[in-house]
Length: 126
Image 1: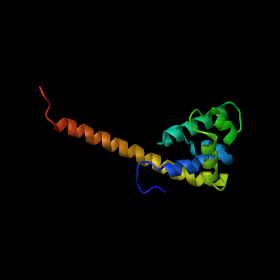
Image 2: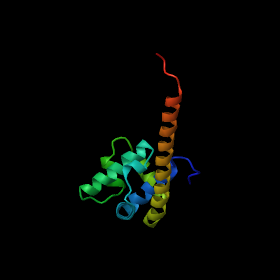
Image 3: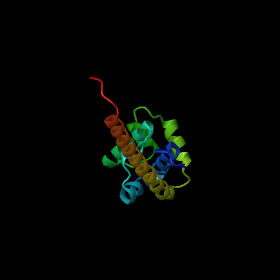
Image 4: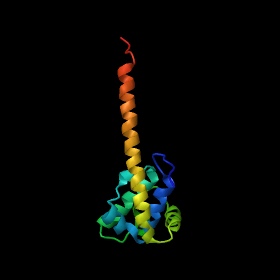
């Protein structure tokens, strides 16, 4: 799990795994999971594929998501699905990833703020 870092790739993968075995509806309806919650670009691709499958009226699972993914392979999706013992774990993973996402947003705002302060203090070349 996350140790205070602004992202947690393993947690992202665990959430995706639970989504691929039946937790998509919970992730969307109960937690409003969004692609920006995912830091890892491959995980963003998988989440976007899940959303596309659902928007097309399909069942979100390894096979349907695999068809939508352009760079992530079926084997990788199967490995994701194996990370979660049950779709009921979606609640735990979604809540934990939400906290990581909020922490990342705060971290980014802090970095931008610090950069702005440094820019104001540094002399500009004329």
